[in-house]
Amino acid sequence: MKINFNVGVVTIRNQPVTLGDKGATLGDLCVAALNFLTPEMSQRMNPEDSLRRYRLAKKIENGGEVELTASEVTFIQECAGKMYLPFVYGSLVELLEQGEAKP
Image (cartoon, rainbow, N blue to C red):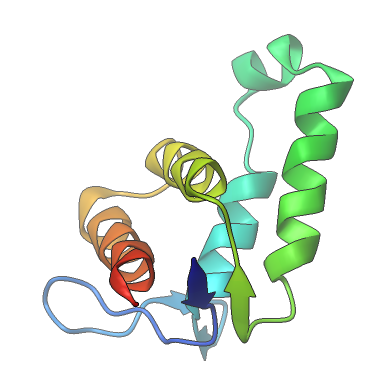
C-alpha cells in the first residue's frame, strides 16, 4: 500500500503536531517512533530488531509516497503506540489507515 509521509499531522483538536519549531509530518513522527526505545526496550533489543527499525525508517525518512506492507504499517503503529500520547497516536494511526484504504 502507498502512504504519503509528507502529510502534516494534527491532533484531535485540529492543532498541528510539532517537532521542535516546525509542523510534524507523518514521516517525521513515524521515524521518531521507530527510533524510540525505553531503557527496558533497549536491553531486550537484538541486532535484527534494530536493523528492522533502521531500514524501515530509512525507507520513509525522505517523505513522499512510500510503498509499505501491512506488517510494516502494523510495526510502525506498535512503535508509535509506545511513544505518543493518545491524541497524537490516534491521528497517526488514522493517517496510516487512510493510506491503506487507497485503491
